Length: 102
View 1: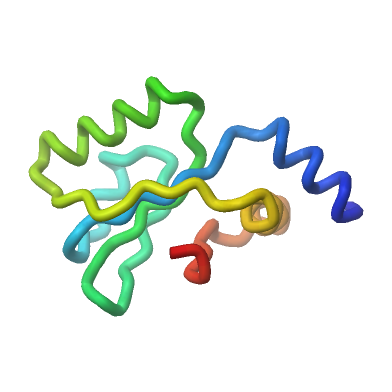
View 2: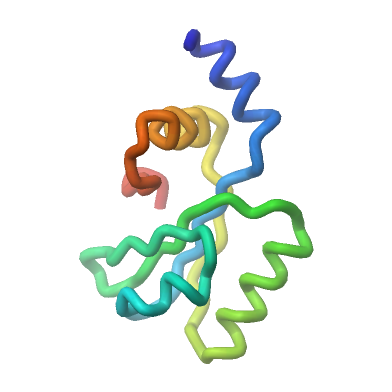
């Protein structure tokens, strides 16, 4: 798929968000944050990365983080190039994780 077509596909896909929290989360937390990939960062933080349907769903994720007492560090939405790369990785069946966007 050409770069232009991937960017077009990215515009029609569910947006990808990255949510960084303080501390390393164990694997069982993944089920609590359905559809998100947990990446343990070298500095001790955890990044949750994945698709978020809309603002209501984003607020729901943030509410869950608050309710379990996880310190929120950052919420970011990767740029279109990174999002296109994530879509390309999903197409290849690879795990969605992009360490260069934090």
